[in-house]
Image 1 (cartoon, one colour):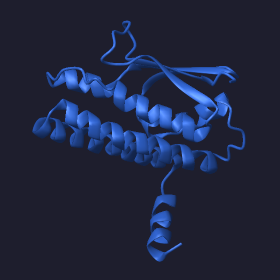
Image 2 (cartoon, helix red, strand yellow):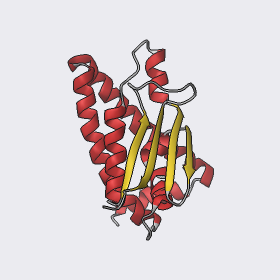
Image 3 (spheres, one colour):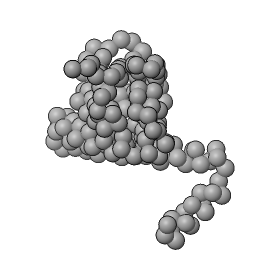
Image 4 (cartoon, helix red, strand yellow):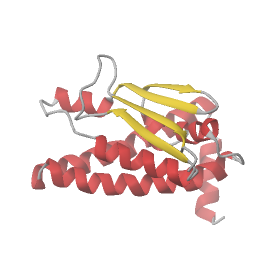
Length: 179
């Protein structure tokens, strides 16, 4: 560890656990703010389709990277559905989502985003709902496949799909059928 990192760690150790959590979530939020600002800039200059394509590729890569690192960081030796959800819950995307519900069983898990800050912010700015399925699907499929190639992710609905009131998107994680 270099000297600058040691000094940063000493500085952070001076904070309470609660303060560290606030710092941590502020930085997570800022990562997603930058993502949104980049998207809006690309969208304004090149259109929603171009912004979505660029965003989707970035998120596919992010899903792969997070699924490689998080199991090691979390000490996950098993790679089943419950462990996938544990890793996903610790992902930057999930930590940024405040309104989500995970339903976890041994052989299946369902994630429902009940309120989406990104979409709600777009609506407040009089922007249309972002058709985020391509972006989110790439992220979650890559996360799932990288975590365990025997698992699969299925989208029940996500914009631009019709959705029930009180939910923005719904994803199901299962084991792939045996061939």
